[in-house]
Length: 270
Image 1 (cartoon, rainbow, N blue to C red):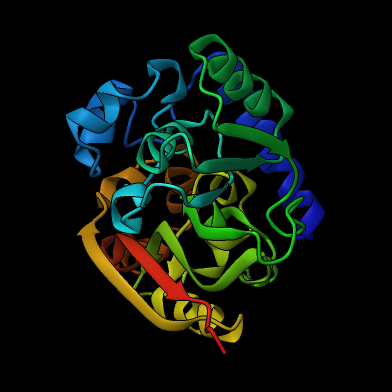
Image 2 (tube, rainbow, N blue to C red; image 1 turned 180 degrees about the vertical axis):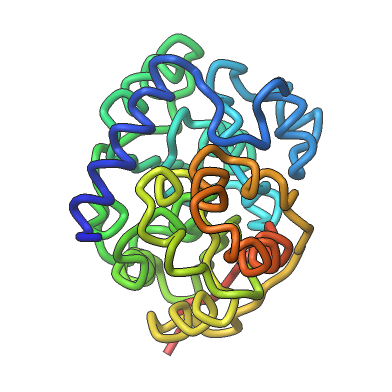
C-alpha cells in the first residue's frame, strides 16, 4: 500500500473521530474515555488537570509520565490529536515552558485549538503538519513525545529522523506505542481497516529504526499485554478468518504477542 494511500485513510478515519468523538478501536467501545485512560496509565490527577474534551481515548499509554518533564522545557507532541498529552505536558512545563502539538488532521487541530482558547491555556500551540515533515525548527525542542501515532506512519523511519532533527543535543524521545513479538501477518498488513486502527510494530524493528535514526540509550519499558480479543474480534480480522480459517493459529499467535510499551531514546550531545 502506497504511503499517501495510508496517510489519506488515516486522515479520513481520525477526521471522523474528531467530529463524532468515536473511540479508536474495539478495546474502548463501551468504555468511557476517562476509564480507558486510567487503564493505560494516566492518573486521576492527570485527567482532572486536563480538559475532558481533549480526551478521545486514543492512546496506548502515558508518555508524559515517562518523559519526566521539567519546568521551562519545550515539548513536541507528534500526532497530538485532541490535545490530551499536550495539556498535561503544559501543566508540567509551566508558564516558562512551551508545548507544540503537530497533527495532520485539520479537524483534530481545530478541536485542540478551540479547547486551548476556551480554557485559556497559552503555553500550548497546535500546528498542521505530518510527522514525516515536521513544521518545527532544527534543535528547538527538549523532549519529543508521541502516543500510539508512529505505528500509523507509512514512513516511520523518516518520522524518527525528523524527531531527531528537531531535538536539541541531549534531548529525549519518549513514545507510547503498540509493539509485538511476532511480525504482523502479511494478510493483515495490507488491510486498510487495520492499518488505520493501530497495528503494532515488531519490537526489534522499532528498536532498530530508533537506532538508525541516531538515538542512543534506546530502551523498551513499561510493557503490558494488549487484549488479544481487541484485535482478533475486529470485523476485518473476523472476515479474514471466516474466509481463510487456516490462518487462525497465525493470527492468534500474533494477537497474543501484542504489548503496549514505552520506547525511548536520547539524541547524542556530541
